Image (tube, rainbow, N blue to C red):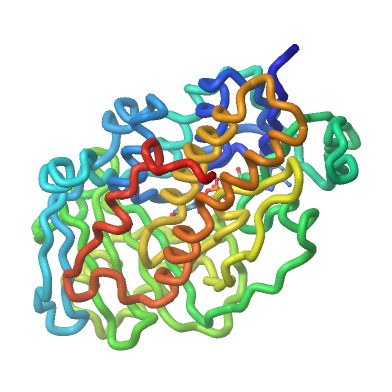
Length: 385
Ligand code: FAD
């Protein structure tokens, strides 16, 4: 008997990580991606030690270390005076404590490393899923996928790794209504040489603003050759939730005109900026139905303040792969559905805690202990019974 065919909708970070894990477990895998080609979109990805450990187990950690930066410290500063209110050691200290460092990199470098670990014939580009149809409860048979180009495909299991606007989630549970926070986020990448003379460029620095929605975060990318700038501020007039919409650098500078000179110098060096409205969603009460489940932003999209969006997607991918591997490559329809339910049970509490924790801009404000997030080992955490 052939191994079940696992269909993954979305070749983002979580979808590709799941493909690697499931292929290694002996499953047949097909990833469907709406984009016609992989492109260098987005700006940063901040991977904390829990995410790096999961990626190391997938065999892509060495490739990431070729381009990623490893921030030396995590520093908190006050927006107007510049006073340093906390300084945590990262780099070697995180490696020694958690078995993996924090890595910060361009999102495209992470995607490229993941994509290279998946055989090209397992990824179907230009396939935008519009709907799916699953057999009645408890029945065997294929799940039929329908794409925007009018074509179809059949799979034994469907994983929705299709991000914040997930079609698979909508197909399972209907449309959602996320709540706009009234906060927008700006993202920019600046060549480090333009910032010569500014201190702490090798560190993760957070400027805590005059209100809980206002902040500027900076950290190195690309082995320190670039500096990433992430800034949030209240703004009711912009509601577009997009990773790729351009913003206005002059508006960005005006928003932070009262910040400390060193923070403003970072913004002055930006040529272009991406702008996105931030929405908040409650944890989903359920992610799976029969042989269809979700991972990553499709089931727990979160605010960026704990930098765990990618990390949770990668952890999901590993834990999902382990539950399906435990069911085995000869599993029948009932066992596959059971494995998805157990995967969900293993992941829901942790991801909901991080999702809720990410809402407030309070994470590590006073220094604090990050162990419950960073110590998690997706390869060792017990499988759900
Ligand atoms: P995503 O990474 O969002 O991946 C979802 C994938 O599914 C995408 O490739 C998407 O094209 C595909 N997809 C969606 N709908 C369909 C469909 N109907 N049919 C087929 N495929 C579909 N995070 C940051 O921290 N910084 C950034 O700069 C940043 N930039 C981003 C740029 C883009 C274009 C995207 C899609 C995401 C970006 N993110 C960024 C988000 C971050 O990558 C995710 O929050 C996180 O990694 C969770 O990953 P995910 O795999 O669950 O979802």
